[in-house]
Length: 485
Ligand code: GLU
Image (cartoon, rainbow, N blue to C red; front, side, top):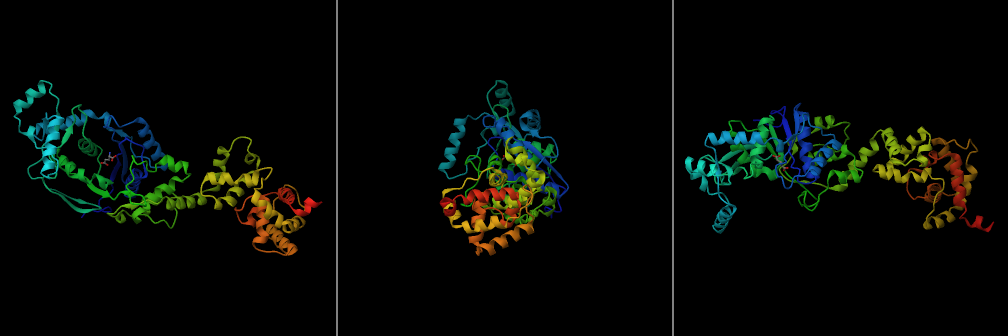
């Protein structure tokens, strides 16, 4: 039996409708299709389903393309737009009509509404009665020729149970009568979703339709269309939806997190792909991946469960922080070079120090913005001490005095080595006769004005000896001894 491994190489597609900004639920579908295509040596395609003329917008389309590009999920062939393919949909409907499988339906919205109400009163599913299916060929031709508005409907076959083996959900069966003759072309000549999707999936050579389970109800209609058009349906796999930690489904309309939000939050693109693929256990999160190809190799589609995938923003942030800290430090140096305005002291720092600052500080940062916020503690000419720092610094006078005394008299622009720094701390501790927090905290505060930051011994190597002296002097201004003098 075909499964994810035996059925490849897969031609997959991501087929978003540009009717809203893409959210992480949609993006997850793109990720799964991309990884599966890559893993099987297949092809990943992108199709914009822009046939809802009222709701489709160029801005949403741009957001989709741009989001995929940020994530690195480039399609293997040019992007296709359904709005440019109306002729092909019409040609397919003409073929179906010639074969007696499509017919014009002249029922008005009011007629259909009445039928729906009647069905609801009898507790039946709302479905088209097939009234116009019974018209004679001559009646049809006359009414069409007279310009009467109509849609084109698909004529369901008599035997209508549809069975298929879903690669995730298992054997599925949709009983006859679950739906009626459905619309292929709307009154304005634009295709329905079900028609366009099938015509395009055939034309693009798609072999696996991997999408959210909210489309499961369409699959039976699509399979019938494949058969009527003389094509073998592709394989189908419907994954569970992405829900938030309260179990609510993410949707465009509920304003769920999108890629622009991820960018604003400083998340790493690799982490977003990795996280979305890891939900339901399809990719381990223990190790980080070097590339999307590595990820594709480790991806396990068999783990894609039937249940929903729960999105937890804190987990995504934590994974992103790991990618951030593992990145090439030079890439962060370059990013800061670009992000910081001309005139920022960062630009005057020697190359080696910029790199050391990135390496020294990023363990305390999860994003580039965090890193950027830590820099002034090291690069500013003057440290501003908050009110709460005053009492701490006052209490630490003896430590700061001892540190000044123990500071080697070296080249003012020199920095301490790691062993100089630990020697300095040892001597300061001995001289002031303190250890632990009473030793470290006043020094940390004096040097950076901040409570947190890298290990003190690392911190001492990130400032020049001159800067250390200057800052400790400045901090010591608060000491009772200095005030008395
Ligand atoms: N255009 C549909 C959507 O955005 C997807 C259709 C499909 O994958 O078949 O939900």
